[in-house]
Length: 108
Length: 118
Image 1: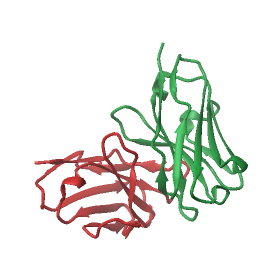
Image 2: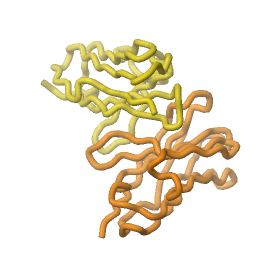
Image 3: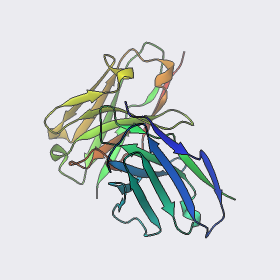
Image 4: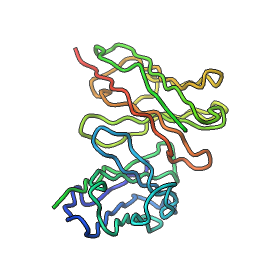
């Protein structure tokens, strides 16, 4: 099973600042990595797939990078609606499909 | 528009059973792979089961032998039969649509809460 590790667990950022979230895989997942955003009481929403491709309707301030075992989600200028929990998910080697533990982005 | 609506959650005693349903609309259900994903209170996401459009099925080890995924393409519905429920099965259960080419999820339902407690 591929273990996905996200860091930090919590990130405190001021509105308008850049946020950088990390996701590490226990073995290579190539570029088969997705990012999701989840707000309280809501289902997750797909942000990024293929490590760097934005899903439909996702603003350009969200960008993904990386391949192999190291990945980054960057939010270039945080808006109020971006404060949420973010999860990475690998789909290279499964079952099982595995998610990271999440990074909570909160207001500083 | 794509909609996924789960139902069937509730309170059940340890060792009991529950059947979850997911009603799909806004897309050709029979063409898509589907999964169940759960989230324990205050915890992260855990994929638990997958079914392809042709009926290939996978489970996470923790539910093998206890949970059964199925689909009825004529009814545009996905199901999860859960038996021998344990306290650690307590979670919000989401159905999610696989993109069809790669195994990530482009649409999710709103979730249904399953609570296993005596």
